[in-house]
Image (cartoon, rainbow, N blue to C red; front, side):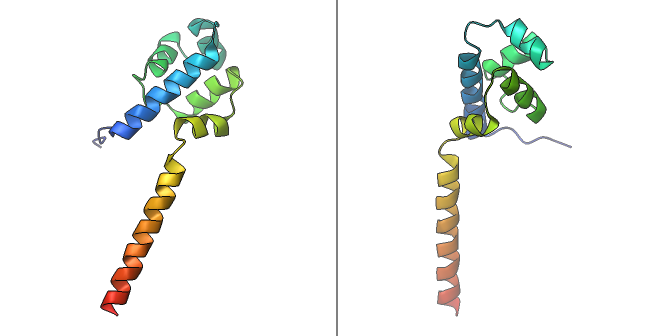
Length: 105
């Protein structure tokens, strides 16, 4: 199976996630946080630098737990405008589809 390349939006979300985790880590060492989360320091370093823009869900859960971050809060900060954009996109799509049905009907 060939994996599709990540979109620019996916890469930006990965960078925001890394920035948030690095900020939450504060003065704690990468090694300490990574080992407490059960991952390698190199993996955490790559996530923080955006080199792993889509880390495994359970990796994010583990790191967030060590840093006392809620997943809801993290998601809201990583993708703050997506919910609104998706809702707007759906509304536009529904309006367009309704208009097309009326024109055809």
